[in-house]
Length: 117
Image 1 (cartoon, rainbow, N blue to C red):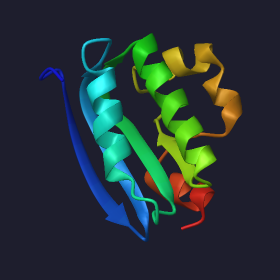
Image 2 (cartoon, rainbow, N blue to C red):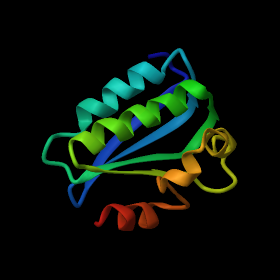
Image 3 (tube, helix red, strand yellow):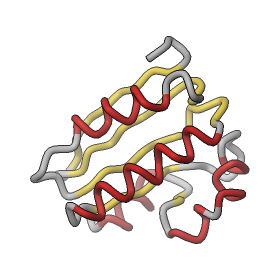
Image 4 (cartoon, one colour):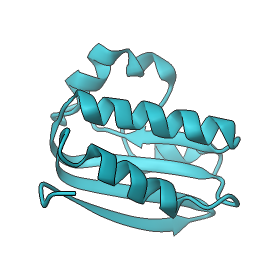
């Protein structure tokens, strides 16, 4: 993974919260996906991806989110994405149809509530 993005993970009430800052593109989406996947153990209730600090997000980032959502669904774990309305990645996600998935939430409390924390 390049230095375009940083990833911080923490746990709250059995939910892994992964905060990404910087840029997500083809050069680092795969590495971010691997790091996030390894942070979510089998006993976690779910995963929240916080994109509030992301400045750039291309289609490889969208694919990363779909891959994570699919993996978690197979493991019966929750998935949510924090993405304020005015953040740069929002348009890319809305164009992908992700807005209809129920993943997108304006803030962390809304995402936690969606997963059931």
